[in-house]
Each structure stands twice: as C-alpha cells, then as structure tokens.
Figure (cartoon, rainbow, N blue to C red):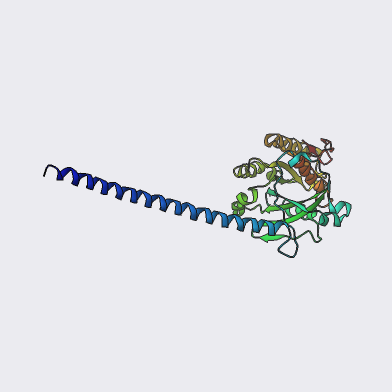
Length: 291
C-alpha cells in the first residue's frame, strides 16, 4: 500500500497534464483557424475593392467613361495652391471649354430671405434659360445648377432657394448644410425684409458656421427711385447688419442684371484665392458694394 499510492498519484497527474496539453493545443488550433479565415476574407474584400477602383478610373466599365474622386476646396485656397482663372460660359461663350475638362468641383450655395423679394428671379438671371437650367422644384425649395469653366476644371454651383414663408423654415437645415456660401437677401424697397435678415442669419448659423456670408439687397432699380433720405437710412442699416454678420454687402437688380454675376465671381474668388479687383462703392444712388 505504501508503494502503490505514489504510483497512482503520478499516473493521475500525468493524465491531467496530457489532457491540459490537448485542450491548450485545441484552443490554439481554433484561434489559428479563425485568424486564417479572417485573413482570407480580408484579402477577398481587398481584391474586390481594387477591382471596383480600377473599373471606375480606367474606363473598364461604363463604356470608357472616366470618374474621379472630388475633393471640395478648403476656404481660402485651392488644393495644391494652384491659381485658377474662372471663365463663365454665359459671358465668354466658350461652351466647349466646360466639356473638355475632366475635373468637376461641386459647390453648394444657399439663398435665404423673406417672400417676394426676388430670390428666384436672382437665381434664374444667373443660371440663365438655356441648357444649364436643370432645376428641381419642390414645395418651398427650388434647386438649380450652374457650371463655370475654369482652367483645368469645372465648378458646378448647386443653388438652393428656400421659400420665405414661415411654413418652410424646416428646409433651412438641409439647404444650409455643407453650403460654401449663404446669400441673405432682402428687398431694398421693403424695410421689414431687411429687419428680418437677423432671424434668417441666426437660423442658418445653427447649421453652418463656416459658409461665406453675403448680404444682398434686391430690386435696386426700384430702390433708386426712392427719396434720398430713405435710401440713406436703408444703406446705413444694411451696412451695419453686414458688419455685424461679417458679410459683404451688394445691392443688385435681376431686371437689369446689376451685380448678379459679380456676386458669384466674388464667391469663386474667395473660395479659390483669386484676385478680387472690384472696388467698394458707397455712393448713394448707385449699387452699393461694401466689404
């Protein structure tokens, strides 16, 4: 009995150790199997991604059409520091220049203001009535596109016009999100529309704090017929609002195409760090430009 007990204990311990090694080995095998499956799946996904990228960039699919990844410009300059010179198709008549270039930069611009102040007329005057006017009209929201030919690229402005009624203020978040510029518009002949600009500005700033702010007085052709003292009062109030908003102030007229194209040239110059040659104009009776 004295000699048997140690032998049985040693055998039991050996059996337990062998069982532990088998369980440990089985655990390691299971872990390696999982790692192997993960590596195979990762490689398959990588191959699929590479195939899709090569299909979209080399013209292997879609009949040879080429696609490029677009990067919106940072405020104040173009990626790479390249100096661009914008050429609008509606002014220079170079319709082929916009179709020859490959790169497209999509930029969103929002129009805010009260009802019946000329926002839609302003947008239609800029976009034009030709092929570029491919708009999408919704209840309380009007969208139009305008493409500018730029050396080596195209700038596609997507213009969002929010109706001025109080029932449409819910469109402000979607219209202002990701916009590079927001145009706050008022009727120069209606003082109350200027007073309401602060409300529009505060609504927009909740959803976009980086967009370029521009304050625009519309219907300058009618405004010029008002008494000079009334013009003086509105000019002073508009300039004070523009300073508070850190915005550039323009007086415009869609009927006579006053400062309509110039406003979008200003936006392009600010976004792409282009030279800006327009001078301030603070003369009462003339279309004001203050920055």
